[in-house]
Amino acid sequence: MHDDRGPDRVVHGDNLEVLATLDDRSFTLVYLDPPFNTGRKQRRHASTAVRSADVDADSARGRRERVTGFRGSSYERVRGDLLRFDDRFDDYWSFLEPRLLEAWRVLADDGTLYLHLDYRESHYAKVLLDALFGRDSFLNELVWAYDFGAKAKTRWPTKHDTILVYVKDPDRYHFDSAAVDREPYMAPGLVTPEQRERGKLPTDVWWHTIVSPTGREKTGYPTQKPEGILRRIVQASSREGDWVLDFFAGSGTTGAVAAALGRRYVLVDDNATAIEVMRRRLPGATFSAVG
Image (cartoon, rainbow, N blue to C red; front, side, top):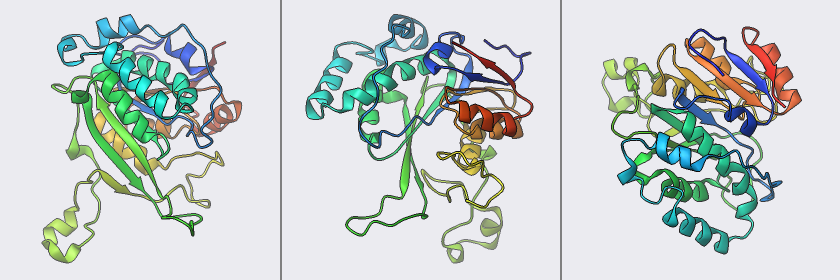
């Protein structure tokens, strides 16, 4: 669908159909922010587009011995155990799993996959992705913590999302901590003036506000993520000129950040409102439709 000479693209359509048109190993960074399974019900999506044999042969090239059970007995056992534990989980994961397989296929050999979820599904995702792609591909569990909105009175208020990070090849993935914007020390009195001036590298816990209802970033899209979160991801896990993919694109934050940092992008969404938001936000992109 794209090459180094092609334009940044926004595609309106079912992401599984669009993914089937993308080249193997063509994206250095894949960021996914799928619909959170807040009601624990998701319409089933039947599809034959997933090419699990191709993923095994191509995407795990050179490291199959470390991905034992890829789409095989160990994965099916884990999936079966989770299904027996919670028979509702299959509704959501039958939708998400084929898209994760396609994301892995199009991920470059030095690429990184970021899967953004909330507390309802992150524990399932970690177990399944370990079984599916291999535990040695797991890089980080990032916690995005924020403090805004209503506070529960009958339990600890839930004010964080989880971002699971997996690398295609743990021996050669791209990660540039020096490119990441630094942040203030939480205890500046414990460090030198030079350290305070320079700031510290972020850890795996990211304190960052949500998109301000009155801020310049606000597009009106209900699930919009702040540019600061995507900026950190794009800075660390891609280089200038690299291609970035987001196929639950929503308001287009991934594209806006990628463009500002000199990356190329392909965004996909099947929501007409999201496409209109991105038309306003990403005037330099080429828009098309599939299906």
